[in-house]
Image 1 (tube, one colour):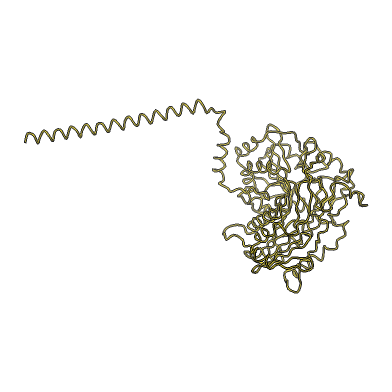
Image 2 (image 1 turned 90 degrees about the horizontal axis):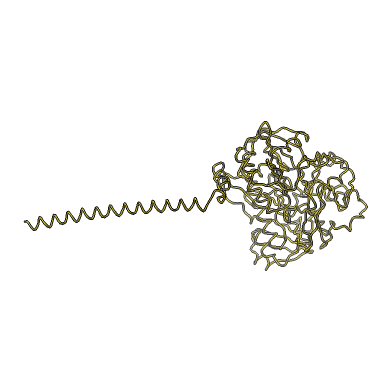
Length: 537
């Protein structure tokens, strides 16, 4: 009994000692962990000072996430061609530079999203009011083409309401004044100036402006120059751009990739391809592609489907699908350009969604003088059912050219007021058949019959009246055809300044002759006629 009691006592003592030992281990581990945290904090404080931590960037990302949680589309078709920001330190501007504009767009996306979403009902404004507003703190973006405002807002993960939803975005300016924030819009179809009161987060607006350091540019509004639009940016000296050469694509390398992009079984289509009257015909399943030697291409079928999603804007889906198709086509034919959205709308007669894409080179728009576009798509239901493409390759000649400064271009306009100057390449597309008749068989294709009435009104338009004539304004004799801007296939083309004009032909203002007719050419953005679009909604 005594031995048994001793054994039990020893066991209890061992258990107590073990428990005490475990407790000591835990205390030591806690002390060690605390010491590690203290040392890490000291190291952080010594090495990573406030100056070395991107606090503003971190706060901005957190603020952006907290404010919106929006998805921003920064694809080429969503980017503006001009951007400006004026803070307390001065004015920053950039234009016709894809990478720079992409950065500026991303850094201000949430501010624009709030401005669009909170905008009130717009009123028509006078140019003098717009000029005055541009003297203060601002953000400004200018787009090429006729972009529906609700689409531009959708790229930012935002939306617009009321009368603004029917606008087409040319230029947008968010200005801070004594009465708060005002959103200014220039409608890209009518040229009308609209303004609407809006609200944005003050800290977000200030942070956006703080990201840009002033550079050597000025606004036309600052120069009290009423000849051109007050939001035109003036840069010292002429900016330098590539000289390009344009040629038609007529098949060969890239044809397999092109057919695949449009939903055809390329192997089957190429194996059974046949030619008739200079047109190659490719058939696969229910889809047909016709290709002419001048680069004109027609697609009919249902092989290209829209994504199966709910709760998304259908026109936005069509635009995205058109962007992917245009990008694939440009890559397939090895064209050194990127897609640029020109126009998107619902055809009031057919109910089809119409999406039109052009090209841009390094942020500079390219106009096809014959067709007005690179690709035009028609969507019905959940499929892209018809497309016309003017397949043109463009490659750099290896040369660069400095275009005339904006101030000099503005000075060459004698009688214009609020003229919108736009830099662009004009591809004359010599040899392209704009009627597309060589691609159609009326006996077997009912789809073309539906478009006959649309084309009859513009095929025979005299060159001197259509606004896209080959002769510079003020030089109707044709003496300027040897200058660098005029393209015959393979001839170098330099970007030049053009004046965009708004409204119907009978209502266009008289810009008068220019002092430098070989440099300033009047371009009428008559998209409905150029893209066979009928009356846009």
